[in-house]
Image (cartoon, rainbow, N blue to C red; front, side, top):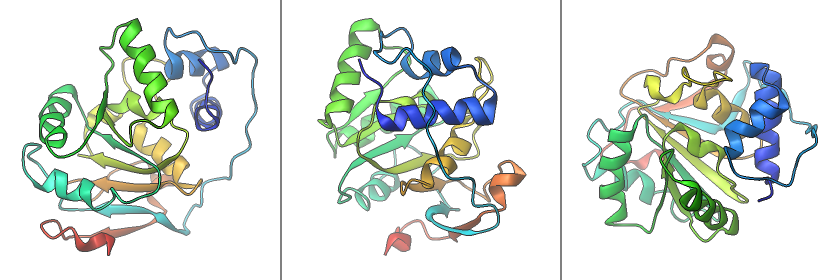
Length: 220
């Protein structure tokens, strides 16, 4: 397998923001898969836009609390016309399973799971890298999938502890990674039931907020 340009950027972010070694970053991204990139790669990326407006980041403050409700599919439907891949992140496996059942009834979707065996992970890697699957859902590790044309990330229950890695090195935060990815033109939607709670240097960014949920007209 070959790391995509986006994965290489994320590897550099893990090194610079979380003091990860290149091998640690590679292990988090590729796991046990054999990848062709074995030498350290430096990727330039813009600094955080502290205190400035970033129109690529939006917060929905009345996000869904029931992953079996139609609200979750309404939110996804509003971005399905995007010309590229869409990633939906859930806080834990229970939410992923509940949302996966609801979402798969309406959309063709690939579920990226940390419980994949080697063969399943290899096939999912190929499918995502080829762009075969437009919509990918998963827990925090899905942000490391080999997207070649990622255009939208939706993070449900954005204040949930499951978006933060506490049991593996480096201790990354998916929400912080999402802020970084927004600097490349990737649209980020944080959906939560209250104000987004995140590290000070990220919250200084002027996030566009909306209290609407039922009509999901905040994309219009």
